[in-house]
Image (tube, rainbow, N blue to C red):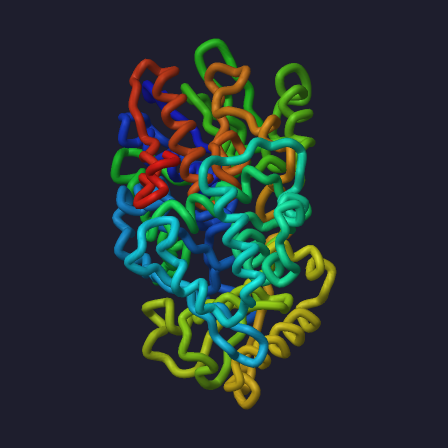
Length: 461
């Protein structure tokens, strides 16, 4: 056994971030991944029904995601992200409103385009502005109130809630506003909408997700590490000077173990008694929320937009993959992915029902889709996509350290200070790597600094 060897259970973003950090610090890293590819919930694969390479769900990042950007830079894929400064909001019928930064200082940088937005009335904009001013100075404490109740208490109109707050927050937090804690919602708004113009820029991968995150596997292997596919961790036991890690390949000993899996998977591999039972009781406080991605291929181009926010219907986002993915840009037709976050209403529906709904709604937003022929389609449901960020959940989010000195936790659900996002996952991996390095007496800091506030927001930093 190599000195300072570490096993990482899970090849998603949390595990890969921990692995890259620890490989840099001189650890011999072995990543165990049940699937035949990396990325976890942010992965892609060749869909057997369509023959197409599809992402399991569209993932985007913002300029405020400093650790995710650091991870991309570290693994050499930063140039595979395409950045956008403008968001287009579409109403049924096709009317567009665009939100983009201006020369004004933060938090006023989007004010001119916000005031011009046709999708909101004057009363809606006044109400939204008043609520933004309340959120700008600092994050509110978690007092058990949902964000929907907070919005109503702050005089938000029905249209402001449906077309602004839901649009931003349901997609970001993958949960309905009546289940979201106030601090989580406030953090999203402050970090992405108020803090600076750079913080709100949106980045979209130009390659399939597994190609993006496969580079992290190469990074680990180049530093003496190993990636083992189709080999999930089934259990572990801490010994005097090692951790016994059992997979379908047998049991091996490592100096340290980082479990970088979802809370429900972790519950299945914990020891059944003692400290394992205590951690299992904490994990029972977590619930999950689903995301559904609807992939449609049309025989002709249905829009000149790369992406759009869709208002007042079930589908919430359109990502024009044939314009976004480099390998598809010269092809004909339109390949679009339509995303429904917090998609509980779709979990029990059949693929045919979901596709019929999606095509019908797409035709409302994109007139060209009414005459286009649907060539093929598929639906991907991530039933346990993220943990639900409800009031009071923060007190149950554990730190990377556990009762076992050689076992550490990573995953977007642990105490990162961020909700369940790719940024939160990478932060968790870096925090776990720092904890392992401290325990080993090696030291090292991997967590990147937050994006600084600019303009008038510097008064609140």
